[in-house]
Length: 297
Image 1 (cartoon, one colour):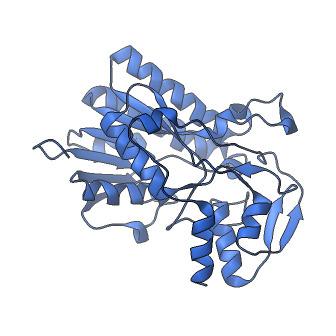
Image 2 (cartoon, helix red, strand yellow):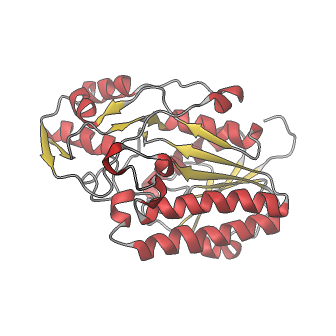
């Protein structure tokens, strides 16, 4: 850090997968870090040394955070597509009511906000091209709406902010789970299949693609965006794109197919030019990660 004053960072969702890695990195960068998490998917197992952990809902952020932060990283939202179709009320509670309170807290404090948007709003494949990505599921809709709200709060109240879009983040501390039916991520689910010699269960043909991006690359981008980002949007995307069939092959898995779900979709790598201009470079590749996972088997 270039300032003599220790910066205070608040990370919502700091006990989650990406949030815990971000907290760890921020501590190393010299920040004082407060995590606010309701432990809906976060866990105390993700706690890292040097972070002040506070348990609570983001809609009560002003009660839990009485300090004046220099930066807010808002990652603490519902973050799965398929399950959101089964529990839209939970999505509304966490991603609408919760985020609205965070935005009001931000407006009162006047610090910089980095919002973790969702790349799902950009999805537009041939399966249902007439349906915009943002309208495929409650999760997509809420995240797209929140991105627009962040932009407008920045404009309405002259507040500093940036929006980061994640692309299928993978790495240590991921949650496993039945793919497209729980809160787990597909890379960790397939890794667990490899460890237990179980087949990969895939909804659809398996040709749907993802730009899988390592959590360390994602966190490096978030720190840069916090320090140098403008009132703009930044895609945090790996350059390589893999189908789910290719992902299963990287783990050496047999495949079992099931019908497509409403949330089955493809996504592609996004343009990271603006992020690279801040000094970001991709350092990790999925093929290297899966190779290391198999070596540890």
